[in-house]
Structures are given as C-alpha cells and as structure tokens.
Image (cartoon, rainbow, N blue to C red; front, side, top):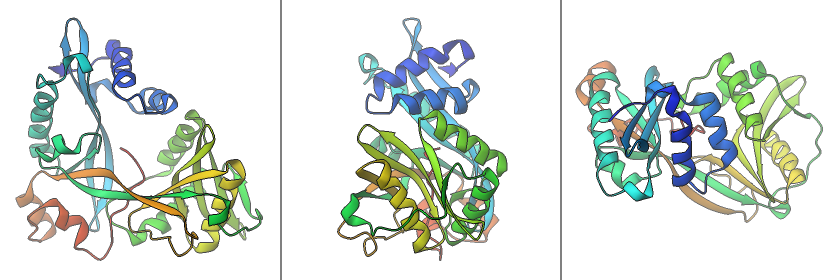
Length: 302
C-alpha cells in the first residue's frame, strides 16, 4: 500500500471505468483531468497493477459559523477480481487514522455506505431528486435568461443562497472559474437568470441522451427557479433536478416525482477538539448537522 504517482494515473482511471460502469465517462475524464492528484490517492498494487485505490479532495467547509479545512473521500474502488481480500479496509484504516490527527471532520461519497459506517461515517447530506416534464413546471418566458453567466456573478449569488444553510463548501472566484470549465468538460452548460442586470440564479446542465440533469441549481426566489427550469425543459423533455433534502419544492412542482437520495457522508474525527473549539457538547456527527438552525447543504460530490 502506498501513495500513487503520475505514472499510474491511467491505470487508476481504468480501474474507475471498470468499477463504476454507470458513471459518465465525461465525468471520469473531467475528474482525472482537473481534480485528481496522485499524492492524494492511496493504492494497493498486486500482480504489477493497481487493484484498489481511494482518493481524497481537499476543500474548506462552513460548519456552524467557522470555516474548517476538510477533505472528501471519493473513488473507493477495488477490481472485481481482487475483492474480498481486505484491500480497501487496509486503505481505510490508514486514511482514517490520518484523519484522526489532521482534520476535525471528513467527508465521503456514498458508493459503499455499509463499509464506511464501520469507520464512523454517517450520511448527513441527502438530495431531493425531482423528475420533471413540461406538465410539472408552469410555463414562463425566457426573458432575462442567458447561457454562460460570469464566474463573479455566480459567486455573488451563491454566497447569498448558502446563507440559509450549514455545511456548505466555501468557494472563491477561482473555484467558480474552475467549476465552469468542469461543467463544459463534462459536455454541459450553465444558464443564468438576470433581473435588472443582477444574477438571481443559475443552473448547471449536463445532458445524457434524452434526459437533462441539473447538477446544481442556485436561486434566490421562485421566479428565478422557474426561469431556470423552463430553459432546461426546452433542452430536453425529461429533466432531473437535484436539490438539497431541505429544499421542499413539491408544492411548486405540480405532481413531480421526488426521490430522496443519499449523497454524502461525514465523520467526526476528534470529538474532544471539536467541542473545545465550538464550546459544545456533541456526541456524534449527526448533532453537528441536524440540531442547529440551518440545515446542511452541498451540491459537490467532493
């Protein structure tokens, strides 16, 4: 077991393609071209090839009024021919031991929740996934809508939107420039709604055949939301809108089918240090995200 190096990137990417057949190839290409760092990936090598790997992506997250440096585990994969031998457990033992001394809270995607629960991870982010057709969304004009809003405008409206939430990733202008490029790299595009020259909302679209996925939808009011959804439904007849669990839009989206999807897990690595820092008395990670006045929000997988 060791850290990866640049010479193994293609090998690890092939492992992802084998282990995650339902994941978009465009997304995997984007991850390895723009996000992946060999030094933040732990691997197991057998028979002269990578058979198991786990990556982490660093970010700053706003938790109960403080910006905390964290990371998210992503891409935990073991080749089918080498599963059941404990390779991923060895990696997780090492990574979580490191977390105990380096981060207050760490996150993970929910590809294998049962395994991650053994290491103290709990699901704290869920998403409402609405399946929309033309019948579910009131028709409205496209006035004020335009593709490719500026990164600065997106930053400003995002900052306003997340004020009502906890546990969101803190972004800067460079993050949004990178985010825009990432959506384009996945074959998608971003639409914004402007009112009196001010961006009131944006949505990132990724098209998959006959359906359109709204990966992120940021809006300041109902009008902004409907403007964005109408543009989406002009692109495809079926739209999947992904929002946080606490954005209950059932009353606005007439009879739309809603599914609640587990999205991201969290682990409290050092309870004593957390309680000293926050002058609190939490016992587990759920209390951090579900007992405050603001509900958790994230739209990022990492």
